[in-house]
Image (cartoon, rainbow, N blue to C red; front, side):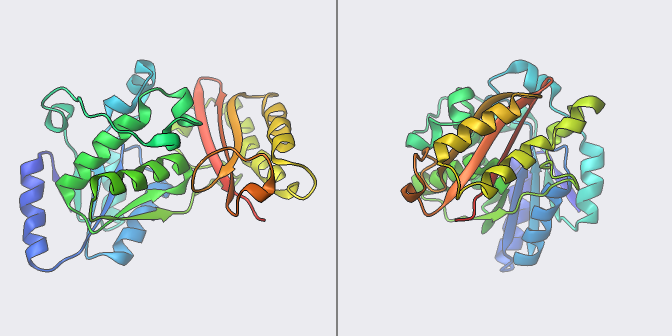
Length: 279
């Protein structure tokens, strides 16, 4: 496994592999890796000849400077995990390497970016779009792998590929969970011992919604879910949406692909999760 810090060096190496006819799988990350990230590396390993993982804490997708400052940075342990997962190349650039000039690119993702995360994190998805587009151009991968935990982000990236007419195929990996149901996230390490006890209530609430689909309307379930979470959390939203448009539904007949999405603050940590609902 090799680590590259510059775009030029990485592209030179990958061009050699491309000339050999090798396919490239790419896993973009912000580091602080966990089993969810590693599952994507394994997915890429199974599908492609070469696996590239980027580690870059992207400053332009953070609307809260404090959140950026506190984001965990654990390169040494990340590199160990990636070597064990048989990653071939790590791309570990500086901010100056990625953004030598001021970023002015503005994307229009339509209604996909106006709801849920987009409504609470101004500019977030534009920052995601800018960095992912740049990373796609740098790596020139055949397939790129993203987790379903960030479901709205996955939809945004698929739209980005359409807008930019990129040749990469976007692949989705299932959400990995702790044994008590908490979705794996780099932010989980910031939970206090007391808050960690309550954190699984997000997943249990999602499952409660899934189990009660036949008894209540989407609106009723959304309201009840917010009440349940409000006991220990400060929920920002709990929405049942169409899995393709991400628009909130009012009755089950509005979609063939319902998904429940949630964001809630537990102490000083903001957690997100989702669940594809069974019709």
